[in-house]
Length: 153
Image (cartoon, rainbow, N blue to C red):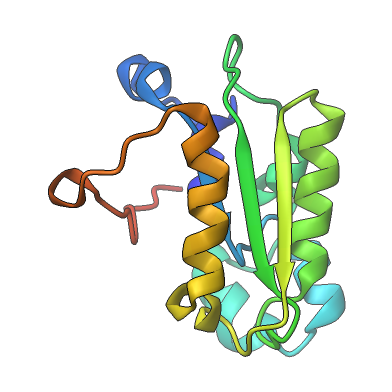
């Protein structure tokens, strides 16, 4: 739920928000209720142990607005072969961002299971095509990836 960092429900350090040039998300969960409509068995073994018995609307990024004054582009990537998180999560996030007047691009691929897209040349090419026209300079020694952040309820 890294995407939540850029929405008003999170109290993020202004320096981080101001230094963000773009957001790239792959195969994310943006709305738990929507996820449970597609995968009802997730409730017992995944959702309730992590988020409690519900309700889950307070965890939905689709109910949030962007931090005021943020205007950076978003790239949403999803494999249509992902059977763990359905593509509806990504298309609903795309629609939500468009409704907030955000600049958003969606790239859908048929590249296998959840996270398999991350190992493909298509993923790398999609990210490059998204960043390079925006003047992003990639320096391998300075590149970083956020894999997880502590969650406080």
